[in-house]
Each structure stands twice: as C-alpha cells, then as structure tokens.
Image 1: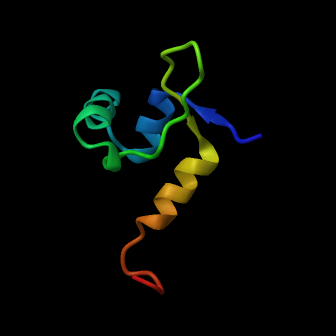
Image 2: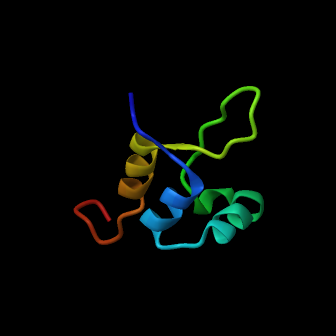
Length: 65
C-alpha cells in the first residue's frame, strides 16, 4: 500500500504552505495532486503514488514536453 501524506507532508514536498494548498483545493483543484477521500472523515490525505504520478505529469521540457 502507498504511504499516505498529510497536508504538512504534502506542503513540504511541494514547497508550499498548508494554507495555500487548502485554498487551492477550493479555488483551483488542478493546482494540487488528487486527494484521497476517507469515508466518514474530513481528513485531507494524499497517496504518495498519486503525488508522484501527478508530479511526473507536470514535468516541463522532458522527452515529451
């Protein structure tokens, strides 16, 4: 199973503040990796594998970019 990241771990990985990530979730959801919804909770969590895939899709100047 992929590691789950909380908002602070995601913020550190992306070099952004947790507050900016929370704002982007509402105003510009494409600016953050897809999050995991755990039924019955309001926890903000991201699977490491989804974050890695999202980052790889946004590489500029690569072989295909």
